[in-house]
Length: 341
Image (cartoon, rainbow, N blue to C red; front, side, top):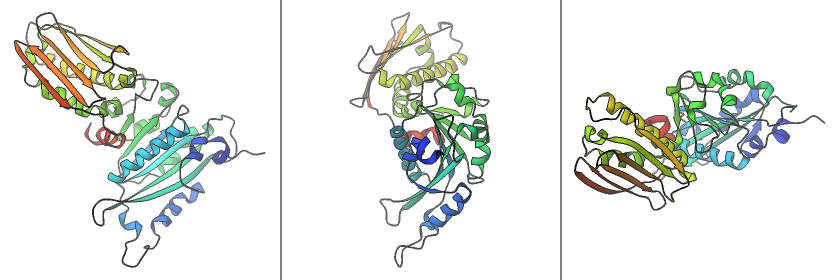
């Protein structure tokens, strides 16, 4: 019995919504969806609301479960309601010996009615299932389905190793930005082999936008040279579920302090500052600055209650502040990562 990739060998492909069509007729079938007549007299056809601004490639790895894939696909659909795009979902078969069709395809479309009168947005998705035998041809095949002259973004999700993800160099090179979520991955971004690392953006970092804004606002009242004077270490503490976000904040603070030290000639600064991250020792995330002098600073980030408690005594000036914080929702984090990061 010949196996069929679409229905037997690829659970994620099978679990995502859509109408199966021949790969060679996918674009025509998608166009026919939008060319449907208006539902009633005086209403407008769906094609009038279709205006893609970008291509978005969502690439599932072997570690992704079907339920995870459905949730992620829905998050990207929600994102596309605000930023219309053509979504390309890639679903590899887990079985190396899979036979039957090499690449199979589904099409999906949705029109979303907003709050305002006549406010509607339409999104579309092409969902591809493929075997590892087609891996080397995948980028060339998929390029046919991208909307030309529009930016393209790439989100690989839950690959089993950074080496296997790094094999998809064609996607890394041809897209405008690559996003990963280190909270869901078994690797850190520095483990990826990518020729243009400036294209890479971590969604865990994007989610911390309000935290970064609060920390920046609080420390802006102190002169930079006073913050650096005698600073010998910064300790990050977090429960396991916020490990990725705290690791992202650690990198952010290291970068800022490095820039500050590079532009300052103060002699009281240490040549190195120790950074540490401990996981599971505190119920809420916290950042604590240690000094060789009488200075101190700490940021307790209670994400459960949505309040940050910040206090410091630097250069004899004591300050404290409470601020509302939250982690961005998936579609908001995606927008932050793609457009504002």
